[in-house]
Each structure stands twice: as structure tokens, then as C-alpha cells.
Image (cartoon, rainbow, N blue to C red; front, top):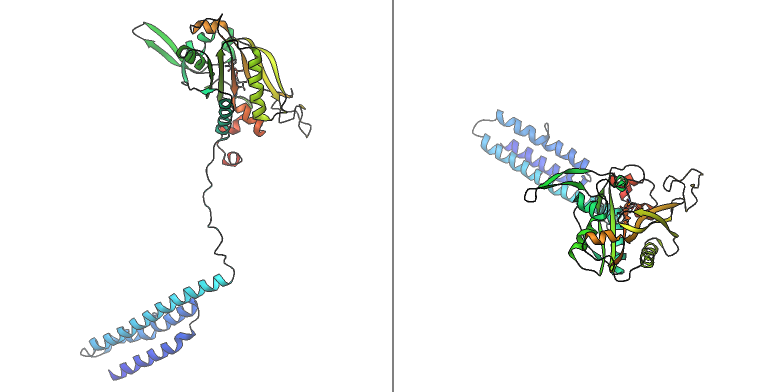
Length: 358
Ligand code: FA5
């Protein structure tokens, strides 16, 4: 037993003497292995326990384990010291703790179509227009008939329609076609049936048509406009729409009104602004033809006209006394021109590299 006590004291003294030379994690690993590793000095003593007389075993085991505990505690202390030293060292040699933390998620933002929709509403609200909303599923009556497009009217072909189903009203013994609205104009009818003039309103919303190419999408957004009251003329229509387009695209933007046809307005005009992709030159800088304006130098942006007297009759207003103008604006077209986008499909592909630019 005396011999064991001597050995333990010698090991402890040697370990205490060599600890100050432990300067790194690697040194500490070597130190630990020397005393407590599989063939370490303390481990060897524990292995020898079995060969001692039974009476000596408990005391010997106790002494060896006490030394083991002491060494483990010294190793733990040294480990924490080394960690704080290495942090101090790193701070001295170039870690800038004032740098902001790493940002792992990009902030969200509004879709470009939503941004343009909001801007359009802001401009018209500034001109005294109120905002109304309508249903995306409509009856044939509101989408076509009340707007002066009876079932066999050829103008229906201009808006190739997605039909939903037939609805039947058992009490009245009628059935009616339901469809995805092809334009926001049916909301004009709902509003004029419900509220008396004077009216100054816009209707933003999604509309649907069987249409698909670089400037046409099967689902797109329109903003309908309606101004009804005493003595409203085509001059008011031109004034309001020109003011809107100048606020949207800049005061110097060229705007043109072209005679057109819509069954629900008479006379009617389509409104174009100069193509911003080719700046009205019809070809791009590399000489290739401008696909967006189809080499016309202009881009159609909205349809408009004086409300057809037949529409006033359909909503129970006297066409002799009531005058007004209406318009329908394509939001994707405005966004394409405003941001210089040549393919409408980019808005709906949800590619974050594209959307992140707005
Ligand atoms: C209409 O939808 C009429 N309701 C507009 C109107 C309202 C005229 C009130 C007179 C009075 P049009 O089919 O031209 O008209 O469509 C209006 C605008 O929607 C177009 O100028 C165009 O900018 C946009 N547009 C039409 N079809 C598509 C499509 N498939 N994809 C994207 N934009 C479209």
C-alpha cells in the first residue's frame, strides 16, 4: 500500500508540474492520454487493482479514483481557460464584433402587379374616384347581355370565355350560364343598378380569357372606370385618362386615342402609349424587331368610350338625361411598359430572381 501511495504522489506531482506547459487543445489531448488514456499511468494502476490482496483493494481503489477525479477536474479547468484565451486571441487578430449578423432570409415584397394595381388606385383616388369590387364568377347577363351583347352578338368573339356551369333558379323556372368574367365591366352594371348618379368609381380585379402569348395571359387584371353624371363629355374622358397616363408614365409620355368599337360604349376609343421597350422606334438597339409592340411603336393600354344609351336603359337610367364615360385598363400591360418587361408570362412564373427586382 505504501508503494502505491508513493506512486500516486509521484504521478500527481509530475502532472501538476507539466500542466503549465499545456498551451493548446492538442497539448491537452496528449496530457489526458498520458494519465487517463487506455494505457495511461492512472489507468494502468486501476488495471493492477485485481492483483492486490482483497483487504487492500477498497483503499487502493479509493486512492486511485481520487487522483483520477483530481486530474479530470484540472483537465476541465485547463480546457475552459484555453477556450477563452483562443476567443481573446481571435478578437485581437481581426474578428470585427461590430459587423452585423448574417441575414439568412430576404425580406418579402409586393408582387409587381400588386404594386401597379396600388399605384393605379392611388392616382384615381386622387382624382376623386371611389373603389368598388365585384365577383370573379358572373352570369352571362351581367358579363354580356346588360352590356349590350346579346347571345348572338359577334363582339362576344373578342373575349373568348371560360364557362363554369349552368345555374338554375327553380322559383323563376330559369337557368343561366355562369362564367369567369372576361372583363371588369359587369361591375358597372351592378353599381349603376344599386347607386344613383353622380358616380365616379374604379373596379380593380382579376379577369379570365382563353388567350395566351407574350402579351396575353389567360388570367390577368383590369381596372374598370366609370364616371356618370350631368353633362359629362368625351372631353372629360380624354382629360381624365391623359392625366392618369401622365401621372403613371411621366408628363412627357405620348398618348394617342384611336377610334374603336365596344358594344357598351358609343363612341369608343382605344388608348395607346408609345412603346417603352423600343421607345417608339419599332426595332431594338441590336436591330431586331420589337416583339412587344409588334413593330408599331405603340402599345395598347386601355379601352374606353361614352356609355352606350342602351346600357343606361338596361340599368333603369334615362339615357336622355344621363351621360357618362367608361374605361377598362390592363394592369399587366401597364406593368410591362412601366418596368420594360417583354413577356407577360414572367409575372406568373414566380421566379424569385425576376420578382426580387421590383
Ligand atoms: C375590355 O375588356 C373592355 N371591357 C374595356 C372597356 C371598358 C372599354 C369600358 C370601354 C369601356 P379589351 O378587351 O380591349 O376591353 O381589354 C382591355 C385591356 O385589357 C386591353 O387594353 C389590354 O391592356 C388588356 N388585355 C386584354 N386582354 C388581355 C390578356 N389576355 N392579357 C393581358 N391583358 C389583356
